[in-house]
Image 1 (cartoon, rainbow, N blue to C red):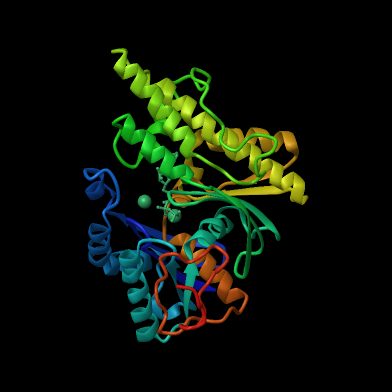
Image 2 (cartoon, rainbow, N blue to C red):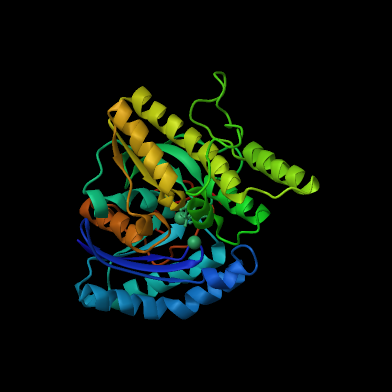
Length: 350
Ligand code: ATP
Ligand code: MG
Ligand code: FE
């Protein structure tokens, strides 16, 4: 199926077009530079930027794909989770196009899309799929027997998300926003063993699949404060490398353990933090050792984009999932278990 996907859950206006598991276009307009001077995403600015970018980005995607909107078999849109006002822009645009073109509409889950996008890179996902989802707002281990319909959380962070920890530490180090890419780059020139930062929830009596990054964040911040108070230079590269190592060490260890425990022979890693070069390298090393096949999309498909929404939408079409009606609304706290939002009134929470 030929599907267009719209993503506006945060600060990226993304429009992707896929045919089945083949990527035809991936147009992204980001307002990240506007947010950078505020040190984080400002919801009102994000919504307005989505409004301005929406139609041009849709037109660019159609042009890049070399198709006419009339040829589409469906229109998919991120219905949640994310910023309410930002989501609303994408959902409204998707409904308008679906109505005007008389095409089926699919309101899909942003988190399931972060996983499904790997089909564009590595072909159909195995069933069940074991996925480590690591992004700005989420860090979870998920077992998905069917990415369109059945996603089961095995564990999740009990406090900060991994991406949030990267962003907060970058702020303490005055590295700007978003912090993940900068820390990734600086860490390459640092020593990951320079400072022994704590590995959250890694004791033998701790929950096997849950994560915690707030203790690590506090520990790194205190370490930096102590250096500054003593009038010493902060070894930024070593701090970045040691902090990053503490995050990816726990993520990869728990993900590999989940694969072993569940008898799953592959691991998918998705979400913005999956773009991290050290996470990718360590995951590869540990998966190789454990005989697990690793699937991670290229970095551009890990961070928010429209192709991931189109990928999940195409799967919904292929599997004849119920369509959403034009009463579809955005749900800023859509749980990961709700892979899509069929109808307008059938999801009862909130
Ligand atoms: P969610 O998907 O949970 O709704 P989001 O959509 O805001 O959150 P993503 O776009 O998936 O988040 O990911 C953004 C996060 O990824 C940011 O916290 C950013 O710092 C982090 N990130 C991006 N690139 C890297 C990298 N190379 N290393 C580490 N973190 C990274
Ligand atoms: Mg972003
Ligand atoms: Fe995301």
